[in-house]
Image 1 (spheres, rainbow, N blue to C red):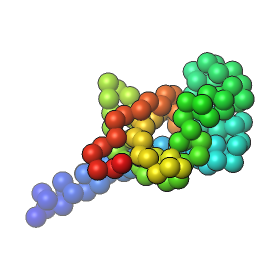
Image 2: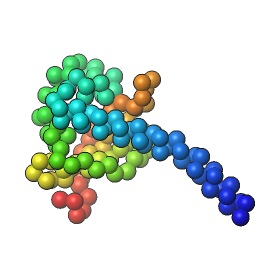
Image 3: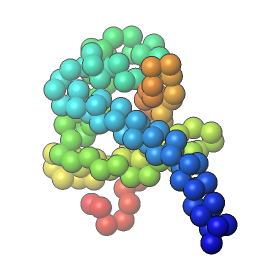
Length: 133
């Protein structure tokens, strides 16, 4: 019994940082989506990594890219967080987003740690899972 309790305590202690990171990552993505919904591209831009900010240079350029390339993120009907995975040493948060027509899109957000917290470094489409259309 003592061995079981030690294993349980060790599991909880080791998983606590992962849960904290997952919550913080979800907060960043949710906050960016809320900023998009409010057409606050300056706020949304702040959640992007320095690499993405350097690529687009201005919140207006960033907003144009999102409206044209990721309209489901700009105006989602529903957002559901899926798994957080480590792929090739990078954290990727999968998110199921339903657009205004109810179509399902699974996007993967590459997250990058920084001095001020997590930032979004990339977003890519993943094929939608069976049964979500």
